Every structure is written in structure tokens, then in C-alpha cells.
Length: 467
Image (cartoon, rainbow, N blue to C red; front, side, top):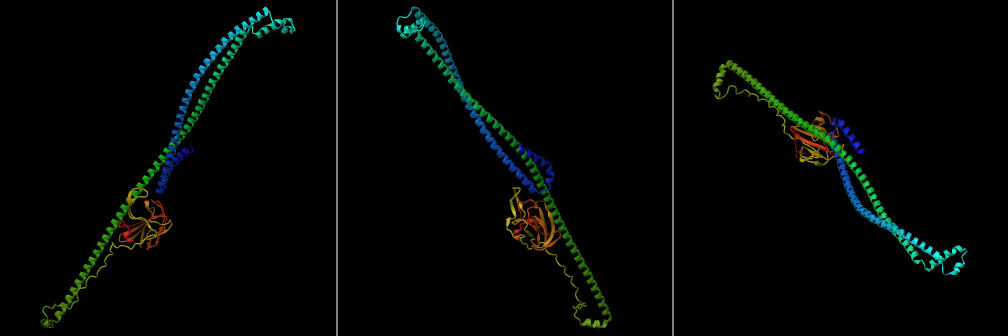
């Protein structure tokens, strides 16, 4: 009952606590669900044990019932035997009664013989008679003498036999009744003991059934708690998925805008270069025209000399052959190739525990693309930048937990997740190996490690060939 009350209290607290829990780390909810499921499994095992105990009690009750049936059968036979003994006792008593009547007759007969002996007198043993103190006792003494000599032997023998037979009949009847009563009493004691055992088993079974009811109530409460926590986890995972999708769309939009901006910048650069080229051609044309006007003026001033000179000159010779050629436009610097690959280094010295590629997700248990690599490292170990660049994000990032992102140019960015703390800020310029933060287990993590990604134009790629 104490556990039932405690489980009910947990349920009430959980019902009021869930909105606040929605702000906590998803790992806490999963740990709570695992604990609930472990407790539910223990409760189910306890129910199985009690049901096995209940089955044993039922079997014991069946055995007790069987023994009670056997003893009741014996008791019935003992009662039948007792009835027979009672009949024997009744017959013995009846026989004793008959003997009593016969004894009365015999006693009457003896008295009659005594009287007859007294009336008729005595004929022998005069010496005994002479010893009598009183003359009145002489007839009695005479009767005694006659009795001792056998004159009334028949009556007294019959009387003696009748009384012995009566006593024996009564004794046998009483012994038979006592034996039957003792047997019946013993069986009744056994049945009473079995009844007490049955009552104890029934009481024990009632206690076991009550405990089973309590455990089943607790199991129902735990199942309800598990359902609520699972619903929260599913909702949180859906939120994380939506945030990841929104982040992906935002990154894609940012990449698209950056690409559009780059194209606009290139087009603007080309336009400016074209304008500079046209301006240079216009300026050169003006200079050429001015040179031609000056040459014409000089020709008019020296017409005669010019004519003679012209006659001697090569007809194929151009009059502006001494003029310097127009200057070529100055070459413009070419933009840096966007596909240049930075030189990446390992961000921590630890070994890789999980490479890039599809794997069974350690939390969701489904096959998913692992978009980076996991490094083994102790909690709190420093995490260095894999290449020079600019920090573009510092903060908590959905399932990645505490995260830092660094842009390295050429469309390449790196991501460092599950940190326990930061050692940089947005906009910071970092070099290879500069500490960005420290190993932790925030976000969707099963223990301290570093999740490291390299992305090209926003899409995750395998870091191994670039390290």
C-alpha cells in the first residue's frame, strides 16, 4: 500500500510537471522512461512470483480438501462403527436387564431355599451349633452349614454366573462405545486441524491476492507514466526534427542567397570591368583622333617638303607609322576559386568511435545517416578548430546540444557538437587548433564525446578524405 501511494503521488506530480519538463534535456526524459520501464518490469516479475505463490496455495488447498474428504469418509465409517458399538452396548444393556430380572428370580429362589432350610432345620455339624452364643442364631448357622455342604448350590451358582455375565456384558458394551467414541473424536480432531489449515491457507491466499491487486495497480500507474513520458519524448523528437528541417531550409536559403549575392557581385564586377574597358577604348580613340589632327597640321605647314618626302617614301608606309600603339586595358584580378579545399586537422587527439555513414542510431535504435564522426575524449577536454576560419555560430543547437560552427571559405564549414562549455564567440577569427570549447554530453548524447562534421555548401560530407 505504501508503494501504491508513492506511485500515485509520482503520477500526480508528473501530471503537473510535464509542461516544465518540456524545457529540459531530452536525455532526462529518456532516462526517466527507462527507469519507469525497469520498475514496471520488476513489478511484473513480482506479480508473476505472487501468482506462482497463489497457484501453490490453490494446490495446497486442493490437497487439504482431498485430505478433509478422506478424513470425513473415515469419520463416517467411525460413526457407523460407533452406531454398531452403540447397538452392541444397547444389546448388552438389554442383556444385562434380562440378567437383572433373572438375578431377581435367582435371589428369590435362594431366599426360598434359605427359608425352607430354616423351617426344616439342620441335621449335622452339631459342634458348630453348640458354639452359638444365642439360640436364635442356630437356624441361621444351620442354613450356612447347609449352604456350605451344597444343599442350595444350584441357586447360588446361577446367581453368581448371572451377575458375572451381566458385569461382562456391561464392560464389553462400555469398552466398545469408548473405542468408537475415541476413534470418532480423533477423526474430528484431524478434521478440525485440517479446517484450521484450510482457514490459514485461505487467509494467506487473500493476502497474496491483495498484494497482486496492489502490484497490478502500480503496474497500471507505471504504464500511464510511461505513456506520458513517451508522448513527451515523441513530441520533443518531432520538435527537434522540425527545427532541423527549418535549420536545413534556412541554411539552404542562406546558401542560395549567398550564391545569388556572389553572382550579383561577379556580374557587377564584370559590368564595371566592361565599363572600364569601354572608357579606356573611348579615351584611346580620342587620343588617336588628336594625334591624327596634329599630323595633318604638320603636313600642311611643310607641304613641299612633305611632297618630296612622300615621293621618296615607301608607298606602303603609313603616315602614322611612328605613332605608338594604343595601350591594352589593365588585366583585372580573378576571384579566388570557391572550391578550394582547406587543410583540415583532427579537432581532438582521441580515436574515432563512430565514423561517417549509415548506422543504428544509439538512441532511436533505427538505421540513420551519421552525418559526421564521433571522437572519444574525456569530459572537459579542449576542442580545437580543424582549420583557420571565422566563428559563425555559438549556442545550443537542437539535438547537437552546445554547438560551435566555423566557416573556412570556399563553401566549407565545420561543426562541433555536445560541448560542455564554450571558449569562443560569434564573429571570432580562429586558427588551426585554437580552443573552441570543451568535451561534454549535451543534446542527444549517450556520454561525453565530440560529434564533428564537415559541410560543403550546407551539405554534410565524409570528413575522412579531407583529414
